[in-house]
Image (cartoon, rainbow, N blue to C red; front, side, top):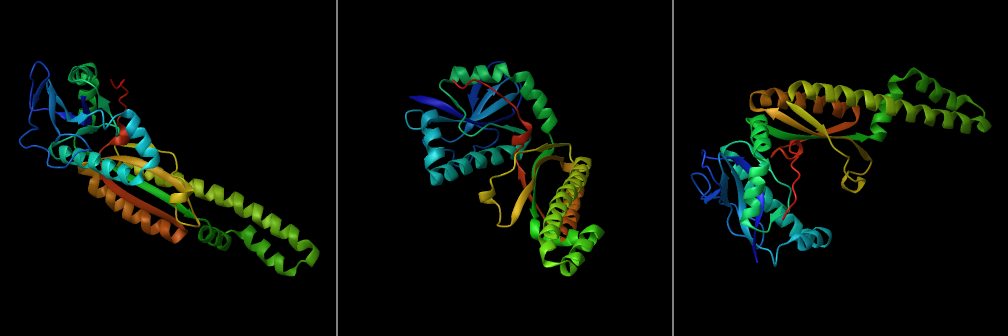
Length: 279
């Protein structure tokens, strides 16, 4: 049974009146799409188009995708990479609205109905995303380094450190506990303050910013806790200033025990919210 796997929506070549099928733009997509699908091509509606592959639904369907995502890391990595590569190639000609991995439509009629249903929203999104890129900024707190720096500049903590060596043995447990409480509380306040200042600076350079959930600790480096997982939508004309800001922040934060990592550019996954019943 044949269906359609959709990678993204982008602006088309011009009004066509009704949905039609034609080769993608000036050239076909060269990137290999997901398993069991044809080369991606454009399915147009008026002046927008979906970049999609005809797919064998008996081998690549919602159930298979769910199982593979849970059980087959190699398959997942390969196909998610192919999904992204098609979007990245489609994006060369202008703004795209990336679709979630695994977005399927059983019939061409359903695919065309989706383009018609969301036409107005797609047009507004493409206008907003025009000449912009998504960049990721991740931040990690190195607790030991951050706490040592904090102890050296906090007078109250310095006083407690001096007391520790002079108090009677029986009182050291109290001083240690008090010191630990102060350090933990101060680290939380200092980290929140530093994070707030970082976000403020990013917002001044970005056209939009999304703060995402933190990644699992298993994917972090030992001894580091994630404190920032931001997606920034950056205008092309602000890109140089944005990257300059990040270089400066990375140097400053590294000296404070905070590691900032810049990734991108990415298709604007975090700035697209299209919910549709796949059918």
